[in-house]
Length: 227
Image (cartoon, rainbow, N blue to C red; front, side, top):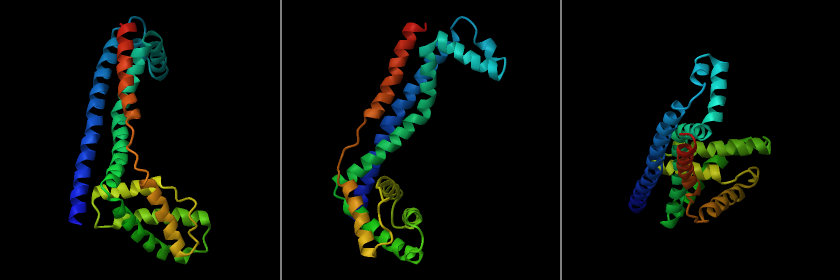
């Protein structure tokens, strides 16, 4: 147990560093892009600000005009503003997948199997009284009950809860027959969880790299064509 806790602490540290390695450069790129785009847009000749002061329709027309006279700068502005939400979201998705990979790589997959096995046993007992409900209702309620068990479990850390919730979200439980015998339900759920975490795929940073490269490309284009 102590070994597992130590390994999870290391995984949490590595995941936090991975999150920061995406968010910090991403936010810096967004700030630089925002400064460059505002500067270039502010030095464009012709109408724009007068329309922006005219109200809603005038502001909309001003934005359309700016897209025609400073297309790359406006694209950079939009992407830079979006980056403040985009990079943390990309970082969170990547680090969750990386954590799952590290858990499996450090042979901690059994921890999740054991936890989910206990949760499934508890949920099966509760849904036994609802066998008369439709299959769709049982599926929905069962998944909700599993997530509730994760939340109520006082023996798991915050990271472990996040990973367990992520697993339950990613694993497709739609074809589980919750009206079947308890042993069959349990074996089906655990088989799907094992299949998912057993893939052992290092998460790709492709989308993260593209999200960082695109603003840089737009900066270059804006500086060339919108000056």
